[in-house]
Structure formats: C-alpha cells, structure tokens
Length: 321
Image (cartoon, rainbow, N blue to C red; front, top):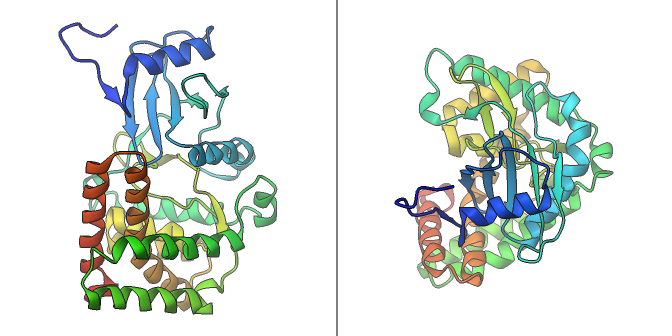
C-alpha cells in the first residue's frame, strides 16, 4: 500500500494500483506483488517490477503487443546463442477488460542500464569488446531460422523506411523552411533509390540498442543482459551500431565496430556508409512517433517531441552537412 500522504504515481494515465490489480487478477498465485515500482515508461511500454522481482511490461498500443508476441517465439531459442542474458516471458496475460492488448512478465535480469557517464577509461575497452562480441553472436544467428519466429525480413526492412518517408514528410513540411524541406525530400528520394543502402547480407538485428536496453553489472564492467526485443528484424547489421552512436557517441560506437571486426564480424566500406546514413534517419523516427502521440491526444508531448526532432534534423548531416 502507498503512504496516504504521498500521491500515488500515475503512469500512462493509470494509477500504479491499477497495474498491481491487473497482475493480481491475471496471476492470483503470484506472491509479493506490492509494493510495485516503476522501472520505466518508454515510447511503447510501461514497465513495472513487483516486490518479488518479477518485471511486467504493458504495451501502450496494439502494434507493441505484436512485438511482444514475436519475442515470445524468438527469445527462448535465441537465449542459448548469446553470452548476455535476455528476458524470456514466463507470465503471459491475454486481453483484459480494461487492457485489451494483455501484458507479459519475466524474472528480472540483475543489472543496471549502461549510462554514457558510466563509461570511462577503465572500462571503455572492456565494454566495447563485450558489446562487439554480443553483436557478433546475434548477427550469427541463422536468419532463416529467425524468420520462422515471425521476425520481419528484408522486404519489411525496406518498406519500413519507405513508410517512414511517406508519413514524416507531410508532418515536416509546415515545420521546415522551404529550402530545408526541399533538401530533406531530395535526401529521402536518393536514400530510397540508392541500391547500396539495401545491398547487405541480412542478419538478425536487435533493432533498438540504447542505454535503456543494455544492462551491466554495478561496476559497469560486464554486459549482463540485453532487453526489449520488440524491434528485432532480419535486416541490416548497421542498425545495431546506430543506436550506440546516439547513446554513447561516435568514438565508442567505432570501438564496438572494431571489436565486432576483431571477433570476425564483416566490416567493410558498405557497412560503415550504411551506419552513417541510417544515423541520419534517426530524427525521423521521433517525428513519426510524435504523430502517434498526437493521435492519442497527448498534444503537448507530441509538440515537444516534434520540436526536438526538427532541431535534431537541423543539427544533423542532412541539413547541416
């Protein structure tokens, strides 16, 4: 129970007690649910932890629940292929009266998110090697087998970017100056038409590596877990280095690339070029998500996200290069 003097947290429009009640109703024999704590709220999910150390994720929309379903199929088979731990759902709740997309739970991986300020001269090489090793293992998982677990393939990878262009250009037109918009539109045309951007050996990629998804031990010396696999795709290996650039900077990302190469990963001029081009795409994802927030009625959050994305575009290689 929460202290009556302390306002109960509201997460995605619901009090924390609602999440505890949903878990209790779905898993009546699960012990030590309360007090419930909030681990995070991202673009797609609300993540809470029970007093007994079980992590539950609640999707914010239907498409996210579809990613959970993909994880449920893929991760049990992928787990033994990787050095760091990955979450495998043990508790699955179907559609609920007031949460029609269900939710899932797994035993907590004992680690903390790898923050950029936790990387220093004492651990930078060790962490780069560990992440490079993890990516080599991941990209070595048979792509054909991954497809059997409903992981989207190369066609979906290319279509995802075509959709991103189609959705975001109309949203950006009133936000950019005429010359800026013309530059962005031309960049997208060239990006989509350039066959070198789609000329790669398909691999199983995580698709959304960042500080909230890479878990390390308390001393930030060892990579102990990788979470949130809803964006997993059979596509371009380059995407898994792009998130590292935004989270930890170019220098660390290139250290990981070199570790990946040293382990036997294929690194050539094409991969490096695609990493740079996909890094330029990053702000468009925020533009797209701002539209999702707008449609859900979160107008203030949508406007803030769109403004931040436009600023990132203006500072990035497309408009400042």
